[in-house]
Length: 332
Image 1: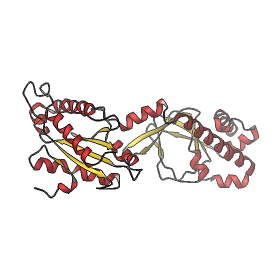
Image 2: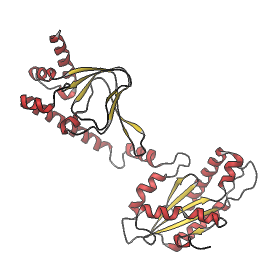
Image 3: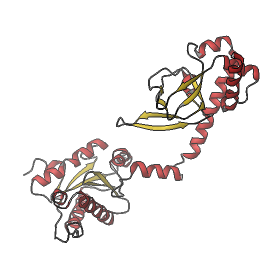
Image 4: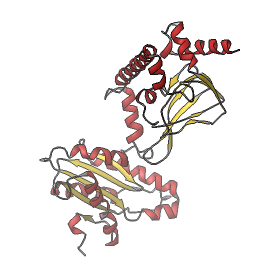
């Protein structure tokens, strides 16, 4: 029985890329220090932060690796099927797991080394075999890096699609808040260049939502986004910051030019034909706009966003359809 189980382990090891080139005597040693583990559906194999003391080969079933994103949500980052190997990098470095692993279906894994044995113990007893394992792991990791590098060229279709998913607002098609917060800094690299940031927020948008419903509000926002893109210059960047607040990055623009653009946006929004949204009723959309200037008002992304973002609400409180700079906060 024991000999049969040992042979089963050897066969599984041979089918895994990481051990496929090993000799029978080497595989026998590795198999001696391995064990099969059975898991139910949706069972946790290891959690983020746990010790990375073993690698796993999928005998049957399916394993999903997931980790938390910046908002604390669990996201799946990898999936392993029969014959795949995972967890080897953590075993190599001896570091804690930076992600969690769970089964998608009932799953059987071959674990190396088995519980109660550390790779360091095997290294001391079988240095030659252990050295081959370490070398193979490094070769596999290097291959993955080369493959990843070939996929992540800046202009590759994959990267372009990823950028679209990460930085695009699905409702309006404009760039989103993530883009503004992550990319605005790239416009501020040249300390001699001027950059203006506009934040435009409708004063009376709530009337549309309350009177005609949120679908009508979404339609109005799409119309605003289309109009905004018509107004700005080709080098400017239009963004849906949050809710019904739109933003524009104006590279190479100083105070007077920024104010002129804000007036242009405001006037155009005032003239928007929203009858298709308001069921034929006439409606004038008024917009208050905040402007922050680099480097005059702040030398960093967070400061520029904060200073411009708070101004439209102040403008609305002063009667609406206002254009304000940070120094105008104290005005009447």
